[in-house]
Length: 62
Image (cartoon, rainbow, N blue to C red; front, side):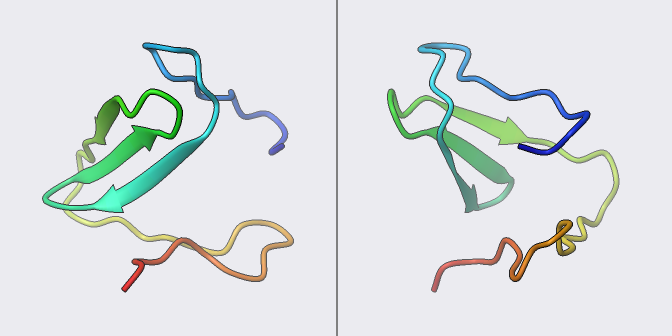
């Protein structure tokens, strides 16, 4: 787990595993109950960078 970060839970079932999809917005889906949330960003761009000790970063599945 990343230190000094709060763990996110599904507001419906309390699930802790999610999938993220790129659509008009970024959509987060709970892998347990399949409820979704939208990630709405206030700025016009999002940069996805490598995390600490990471060998990869989030990318679009093709």
